[in-house]
Image (cartoon, rainbow, N blue to C red; front, side):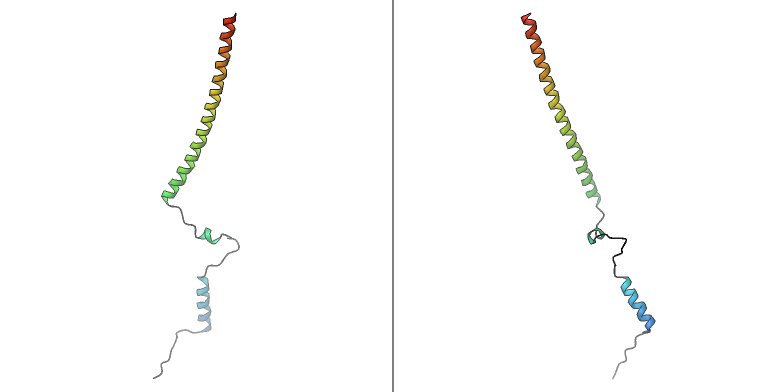
Length: 97
């Protein structure tokens, strides 16, 4: 017994439509959009990741502020030492006079 395989609508128009349909599903690189594959696969960061990034940014800002305050503290100590030396010289000058 022979079976006859009948495929519906095997016209040239159908074949062209089918090929075009298959090819339309294949992503193509467009000239205007030159993103890399990594950029296309980039995933939106989670809320936890956003919070972590914000924390790191704020932490870096605070570290800069701490460094500035430490420098200011060192300068103030130097000024204080200079003032003490000047006061000591003035006391010695009064004692001699």
